[in-house]
Length: 325
Image 1 (cartoon, rainbow, N blue to C red):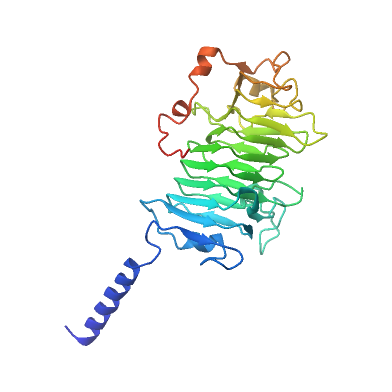
Image 2: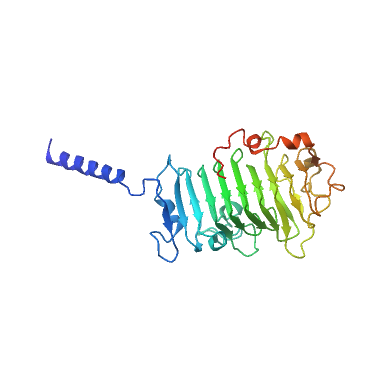
């Protein structure tokens, strides 16, 4: 073996050993602090050092502070938990909206590039943190954009105006528990299957809460269980939903519906044909907005027997081990 070959082999082995010895390649917690008191000052830097396709649970603990970042958790990252120190005081924020120009062009970025946080990876958990799009009301402005499967959100806040939460991929499963979500128009929208448990949903304008685009062959879309729907002062004409696509599925069950909910409850998005396909359903709701006497005649009410079958196990096709309680 000549000296050059030996040197190349040594470099290769040394590089391989260094990669294997990466200090972040373990299940230890990473700490982020905007004030510089932790190893990382930005959440993105902590995400960057996580190993692809991890088979262990990695926690990124974010200390109180405001982090102006536009984040992507890429598709090759799994089993990551981003946990805030304090839900209301640990804030990831950005301010893109649909009419902002794409850098270097005269084209507006459109809705789907406006996210503050985009989650492409699966088996990702967020806890005790705020995700905000604090753009002025100049167009659609997404705070949370999801594409991964088996995503869990516990005690989080999602703040914005139009299009706050976009559940972006059909067939993916999302679980929101004890979260606060606010917005103006269609502020929970998309094709995913999502269960909202004990969440507070706040309308900031007379408009629509949901705009599901559930595919025709997908049996469930959005299920709101034991949630509370509230509104800003002066907001008094809000629809529960309108169908972004014809087979939209949205169910409100055992929810407290405020007086801001319109008597008809549901809107057909200006297309009478949607009334034949949209799956808009209620059962056992309470509150001033829960009276179904004047509901849109094409919406549905579950029977008691049907309501008893509605569980996360049913909605998520028997797979609920990934839900963190």
